[in-house]
Length: 432
Image 1 (cartoon, rainbow, N blue to C red):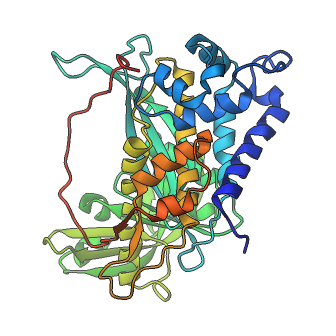
Image 2: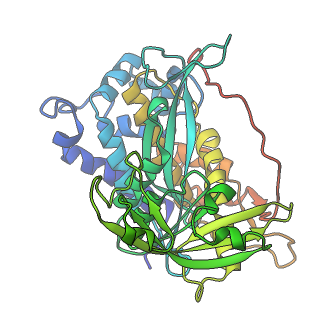
């Protein structure tokens, strides 16, 4: 297995950026002129700068990134970034991520969690697609929905779909990311309530992957014909076939667990006004939570190899994406957007996803040995690691391994806290 170090990961990042410039016709608006001469702000700097910005003003961020003797103006930086298409940042995120170590598997499969998170950006009513103004007496803000696929065991983001507030469709985004995932190895997708649609399940199965998705009790009652008979039980594990079609005929009515798809329902594998019937085998699991509520999980994993306890563990691991959102938005400072321009906002989003993956990969390079007398296992503090890695990308630090190992925190896997729900708002650009 290839040995990774922070220097090698950084080299892969810089090589990925340089490769983009070699294909400038795809990623620059004017490839014949843009970045044709050596200037204070190179193409590499234009790509790296959005990865490293924090919540400081753009002027302060530039002072921290560029040498004082070569400090450009903010207008020059904006001009340079305006020459680059968002596709360049998206391609950097994809190509760099493909070079990172991803060898941690769950039963031979990549364990991928899919979920969405909101990103609130400063007040810009001109962008009507993302503008949110539903709180009376409160100033509006703009909001984008980030749909993300996250490799839970390797702690990296694999894909992203950015949607305006007015065009939010998590299930459609999930299907897009499933279809784009390379099929070089099987994947196991896990998702929360809200992704439980036949179309999502069909995309997973037709791409030869597996899934574990949480259902509401109401949705669970519609899966199988005899679910209501089983629902009086404290727990159950049912495995049966499901049939789908867009017709109601005598033949279809005789099929067990037949689901009629109405014209407004999205199902990509049976065109509207056709008589095709689709079939796949799924498994519905019910169990009681410690608090007394019941949980329902839908999967296509076979009962022979995956017991109920294993299925529950798979869904428990899904929480890793929720934790990663906190580090992505606050430690990596994705919440602190530095522009009103939509293309610049998207540039920063993909840049921060790349930065997060960079930091997570550096963390895997650390050989942290815990004392046998220690009560807990220890790991480097992730927020501190992210701040150090940002300075490492800028070239402010060289050897960071020893520096990172000096600050460790105990791993408490079973810790639980009540979730705090806050009113939606956006940080203003007043100081950025």
